[in-house]
Amino acid sequence: MNTLVRNANTLNGLPAIFNEIFNEAAHTPNKTAPAANIIEDEASFKIELAIPGFKKEDLKIEVRENTLKVWAEKEENKEEKTETYLRKEFGFEAFSRSFRLPKTVETDAIAANYDHGVLTLSIPKKEEAKPKEPKLISVN
Image (tube, rainbow, N blue to C red; front, side, top):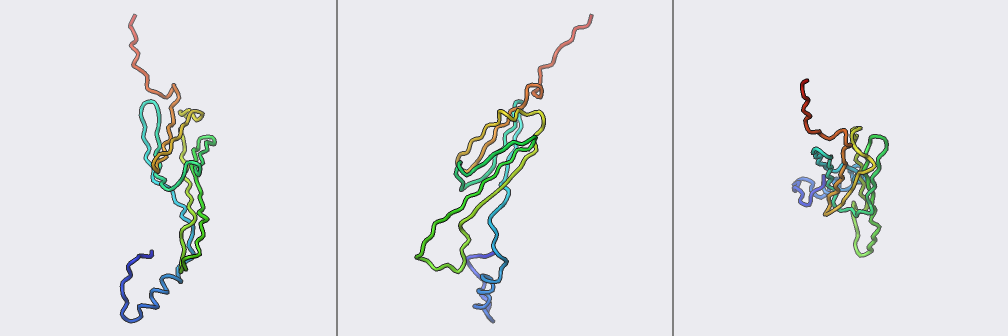
């Protein structure tokens, strides 16, 4: 991990800085699973994913069989010739997250909303999965 403040090495401080910058493994794109909140109530499930920095056009959501998959990729192609970089890590972000859905949900009625970096997926339950009022049975 690189930090902005480096500890001074009194014996060979300058070479240590260059080793830190140039001898690391190749940088890989930021491809992580975003944090999720999963909420259940009587009528539905709700999944909230924290994915700041993306536009809603970047997001892809797919339901295949009983798996809900959310993913996005974005690439920044801004090129400025005014700076000389020793290392450049900006430019590409991606994530992928999958959830196994129970058979008791209406996959055709899933709704998605993206607001202030939080994607909210509303997944309604089928009628037969919702709790029913107790039924009194009379004795004859």
